[in-house]
Image: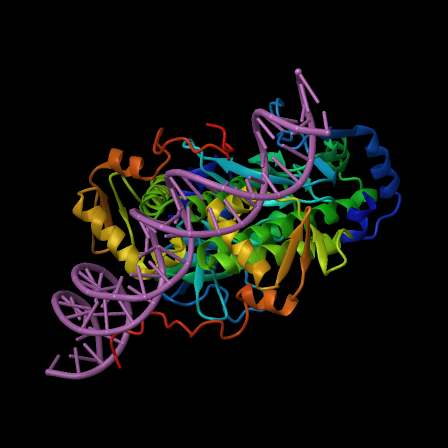
Amino acid sequence: VLRVLGALVHLSDDELTLMRRMGAYGEVIPAGAALGAGERRAAPRLILRGWACRQRVLPDGRRQIFGFLLPGDSTGLGPDRRALDEQATVALTRVECIDATILSEILALNDHRHDGLRTALSLQRHHEDGWLLDHVVRLGRLSAVERTAHLILELRERLVRAGLSSGAGLPFPLTQEVLADSLGLSLVHTSRILGQMKHDGVIALNGGWLTLLDEPRLCAAAGFSPSAAPIRQLRTGNAP
Amino acid sequence: VLRVLGALVHLSDDELTLMRRMGAYGEVIPAGAALGAGERRAAPRLILRGWACRQRVLPDGRRQIFGFLLPGDSTGLGPDRRALDEQATVALTRVECIDATILSEILALNDHRHDGLRTALSLQRHHEDGWLLDHVVRLGRLSAVERTAHLILELRERLVRAGLSSGAGLPFPLTQEVLADSLGLSLVHTSRILGQMKHDGVIALNGGWLTLLDEPRLCAAAGFSPSAAPIRQLRTGNAP
DNA sequence: CGTGACGTTGATATGATTCAACTTGAGTGG
DNA sequence: CCACTCAAGTTGAATCATATCAACGTCACG
């Protein structure tokens, strides 16, 4: 599963052997537990299997999920501190991952032989930042259906790249509560939206597996289609 | 105004002279215009005066603002590509800024004499990422009043650091439309929220100047107060 | 055969949007 | 100096989207 990362972003040379040796630092985190819990400063980690999310919980219990970590994704790896990496990371399923502290130190040496890995990881961080921006747009400007469809499509794309989805179907271990806390919706409303999408024959969902039954319609529902709504003028004034 | 940046983050040595020389590359951007419009790839820029924002516009005209750039903030400066820097940046007021292409190239040389500047700028990027995460929480989990109050407080803190606010009042050149597109609300609703806050004597707003009349109440409204709402249990099941 | 996690569904409440009208104040040009 | 225009803000009424409350179904697991 680790070659996922290599394949996912870049060619690599004897970096592969380095990565394989990292396998020695594998660990397993049960669903619901935090990655790096109990550590003063969470160690960098590479996810081999399972899903996790980055989240923040408000004092009154409300939760907001910033994004998801899929197999092949990493956290804490990279030269500089990153705000996302400082948020709590929680396993949503059983997660198999690698403590990449050593890897991080090796990369910090700036050995040219590891340039490939460095750029690969930096590219990944860049992607994650991009997804975060998409997330902002979802939360700020998309309707509930649009948000849901859009997130599904994002996850599918990422899973396809990671070799975990053929395109028409994808593993989908997310609880509706998790989905809701990610999309900024209530649990109940999320359930209704999903129910509606199933009823409309756009998706099917059972046993943690999601199937795209009508991809064009799903894409359209994601809202980035042309002429989804009449162009909203930016304050036209009271002219005509 | 530029020493704002120096004071804002870090001590510096003869980097100051470097920065002063950068003044030669000053430019003025009228309100409403995009920073870096017409450039194939937007040049790095340092803002001396005025406000700008990073935004994305959907095909159907909806707009989402990711965050604001205040005097002392920069865009495009730093070793690696950054997703935020690749979004459109638009001047909200008349903006005086510096084309920092040269500065960027100088910093890329990794001359140790400029370590201070590099870390200062990297810190700033880190801050901006943090604000983006706050923004996600606002959009996803705060009510309209909470969002508004919270954003006001964030802007105040930043302006205080930049020496542009004494704490009780701050320049506030944002249109209600801009505010709405930032907070993920409609223009009309934003107007009502502001009106209500004024009516309640929490803030006063005129002529682009915002005054905090009742800071404790504003902080409370920002929602991060204890017991703002009954603790929401995470799916308690149907026990009692 | 309880118990708890997860999902679904209905009824109702509320927060936010939309549409539309009306102000106000700052230019601008006659 | 006044009429005109336009950007910005305000307000009311109707409507819609989403939240909340509450109940119930189902399945897995001890």
